[in-house]
Image 1 (cartoon, one colour):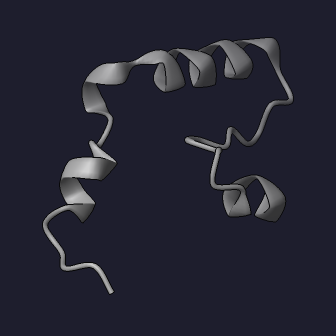
Image 2: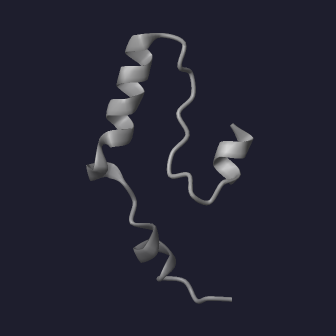
Image 3: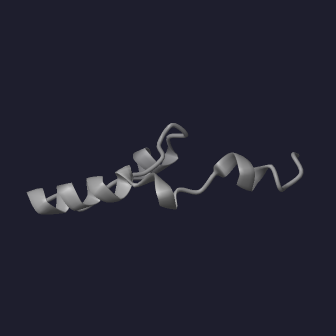
Length: 49
């Protein structure tokens, strides 16, 4: 999990994939783009260092 979260190309890390229905549920959540945060808009609010 640490490797996945430390990779800048990772948008989401799915954990707890022991059962098929859990995998399908997690994939449905990650595929839903309506609740994603626009990181460019978020970080453009703060001055660059």
